Image (cartoon, rainbow, N blue to C red; front, side, top):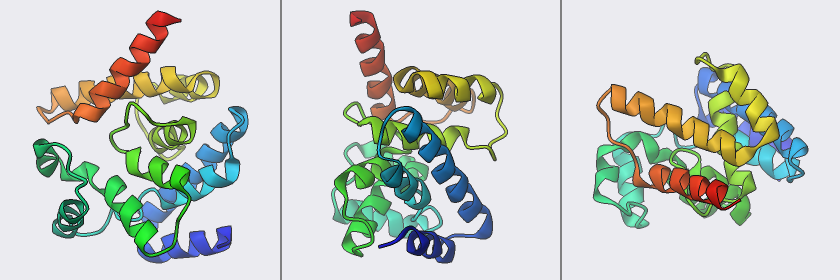
Length: 190
């Protein structure tokens, strides 16, 4: 399938605002992939398709997640905002739109992270947070860090996300904490 088709597919799937976000994520992901010597084509597809199920009704996402055993912890039902990544990875594969396992993994883990995620998955995780349409504090520093060190940038994004979740009294997904700890342990060993 060509890039033009992916762009058309995602444009038909999402609202105009979410589509524009996906295009910016794809562009950011390509820049990061090129900087870190990763596959820019895979980064573009994963960036475009990462929110494929974002606007799917939550009850439908939960149904798919339950059917495919995507809920590895009971509190995931209480965090439906993180389901669209894992659900999209299943739906895209079942629909035959994406078959590359690296791309599917990047889509699956872009919301919570995972201790075993590869560089492409880290790029999508980061690109989703730092794309140019985001208006969050300290993004320029994070954008610079993303170009220098993917792991350190992922850890900083997780720190900011956890701070936000704590300040709003929300649940924190265990995979996010595990990923952060994995990065910190790796840094301490270096």
